[in-house]
Image (cartoon, rainbow, N blue to C red):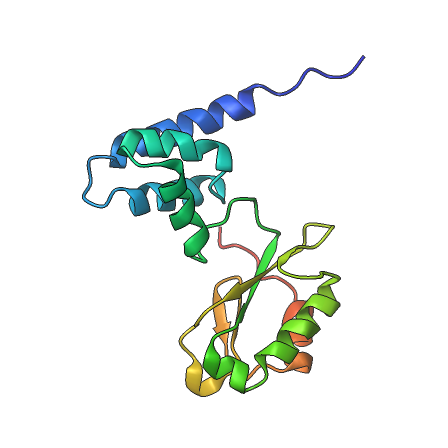
Length: 166
């Protein structure tokens, strides 16, 4: 006999999302604070909560989805254990970001942006990390690095993850 599905997890997610919407929908420009709250609580903005957000703010689902998909900070699926962002903006492109992107895809076994099969790393393009003078730039788990080539990228990915502070 198959185990019963865990209905507590979706209910907890629904409660979390409802509370975030309720606590922030009165704010001016409430969409971004709500999306940040959901992303912080769940690690992503699940597509199934978009209609709830849209209804609460009297927006269309397309408007909410457009904001989620426009900003690189928001994701609609859980990220891997590590998140690697490679800058794809013009200054980085001029300094080899395309080759670095291809190296990252090959190294991680990905055809394009996405998460490795083992869930270890999520690869994402971003369009400016603010290190234009030190390009190409990447961010690994939010830590920005400049002048990154393939060897340095490999070293960053091979480095043991820092333990969380107690």
